[in-house]
Each structure stands twice: as structure tokens, then as C-alpha cells.
Length: 416
Image 1 (cartoon, one colour):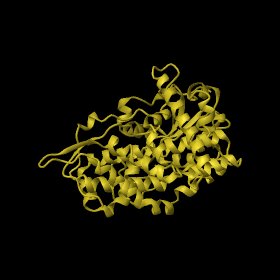
Image 2: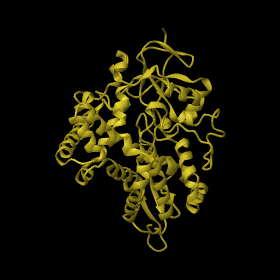
Image 3: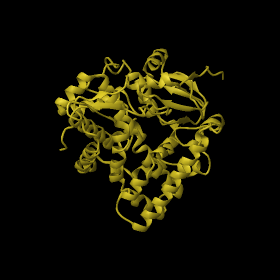
Image 4: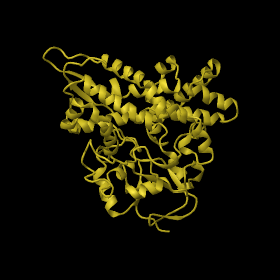
């Protein structure tokens, strides 16, 4: 069949503000053919109802073996052996294997366990802000909230939750997280990309050896034990640790930055939340809806040519849901482009839906709440230190966030 010409889905202007394009696409219909920077073409789902149905559609699978030759030629960019050894985690599994693997991690992220650990998380947030430079009398201090807080807080929290030893927490290189940003074989940055992969893979191998030697009851120790008992393959173990280390903290870093950016653009809302922290639970949900760090989902595939919301999609072509476009759909959310911290109900799709709903959603919500409460309480009169137009939005295909967030603030408030 003749396919429509794909719409380019990349560029600095698009990453800075994709919402006008999403509004245009929603007005045209729910499914659109798009092209990503790697050259891979996909079918993008944009409306709320279509997104919700797609996320729950049993015809769509996530295992990479479902992708056709055209998709594999462009999308399977991670080289061997890493592709086979680090890409068989939960995001690329279908039932029943997905069900069995997911069961191994869910206990670590339950709302009850998150609540038990919350005081520790609050102390971690305060400790990071203790290290920020204080404002001199009559003057304002400045800091980059990505480098000093948003890039560090989620990883320290994750280390607590999964049982990452202190020496491995200190050794983790945040630059390794860039391995989820595809770099094609002919890209000048390819050698650095492959070096990151090798570094992260070596780190994971050492961590597995450490946990096998030391034992324990934490999540990482239990995953290693599952491998030794035959419940996981070696590649599945490494892939799940890879997913925890990268997907378990980088999206929260980005969500903190999108939430702060939104509030800094709406200082009256920022002031209201600072003055009344009881407003934060609903505000967190609205900030997740308003500008989600998970902009797009990962690939899904049809096993055979089929209709998807009125569009014929070939078997093995990638189907991607725009969570951000769904969360700004006026058919579901009144005044969707307005930041309304008191919005209720708020059935956003920031964490996806269905069997692949983010298992760490309760933890991510708690982290965002703690981060915002601590920052607003301790950094009074928070303001951007650069023009809004100078913010550098990360070029990641699936994610939204800023690479740096320079701010100024007044006299620092006290810890709890």
C-alpha cells in the first residue's frame, strides 16, 4: 500500500515546544506517519481516547522481534553485543514473560514502601540544598538546579530503593544515561556513544558480582538470586538493572525540570504552592499532565497489517503514543494548555496505561512532591537566571526536560 509522506518529528523548535504541532495533528486525526532523527518512520497516536485505547490494545506487542526489516534497519541502533544483552528488559517484553519479570520488581515500588522511605528521601533532598551556595546579605545566590539537585536527588533515592551500594552510587556516571539517546552508526558522536555503553555494561557486571558475593534482601540482590535460580537469564538480569539505573532516575530528573520550568513561567502558582504546601498533591498531578517527561512511549508493533483508529498500519511498523499530546487533548481536559494546579479530576497518561503502566509511578510522584516542597520552602523568591528562550531542551527522542536550569534565590531557608 502507498504510505503517506512522514512528518519530521525533531528539531530545536519542536523540542522547545511541541504542543502547537500536537494540536495541529490532533485536529487532523488520531494517527500520523512521522520520521525521527535516526530516519526511522513510525505511526504516532495523538488523541486522548486513541492513546488510551492503543496503550491497552492486545494486538500491539513490544518485543523487538515483532519489528519488520525496515524498522530494524534504522531503529536497532544499539550495537552488539549490548543490544542482545541490555535490551531485553520489561519495556521490550510481552506477556507471559513480561508478567513474570515485572512481578520480580513491583514489591520494591509499592506506595506503602515509598511511604516508609519518605523521611529518608526528605533528608536527602535537604542535604543537597544544604550544599548550595548561600545568598550574601542583600544579594541573591545562583545555582544550576539540574546539576546541583534534579540530576542527583532521583539517583540517590533510587539507590535507597533498589539497594545500590554506596561505592557504586558514587561511581555511577550520569553520562551513561545518554545511551537511551540514539546515535546512528555514521554520527560523529558514535565512538563516545559506544564508550558509554561499554562503561555502563562493565559497571553492571561488577555490580552483579558484588551482589552475588555479598547477598542481601534488597531488590538488586533478589534479581541476582532470581538469575542464579533460573528465573532470569543473564541478559534479562543485566537488562533489568540497566532499565532500573537509566529509566529509574533520568525521567524523574527531567520531570523535576519540566515542573520547575512550568512554575517559573507561572510565578503566581509558584508563590501559592510555596505559601500552602497542602496544594501540592493536586499540583503534582497537573504538572505531570501539563508537561510530561515521558513525551512519547517506546515502540509497539502489530503482528499483521491492521486498522488503527481508521488508519491502515503495516505489520512490524512501529506505533508510538504521544503522551504529551494526549494530556493536552481538549476533548478530555478543559482548557488543556492552561496550567491549573487545582485541576480535578485529572486522569492524565503521564505514566502510561495498561500492562506497561510505569511500575515506579508511586515513587516518581513522591520524588516530585518532595523535590518541589523542599525547593519552594528552602529557596525563597526562586527565579530563572537566564531568559526563558535560552533554556536548552534535551534532544532525546522520547523525553522532555532541560539540560540546565540556572536560577537565583534569596536567603536560604532551614532544613526540616
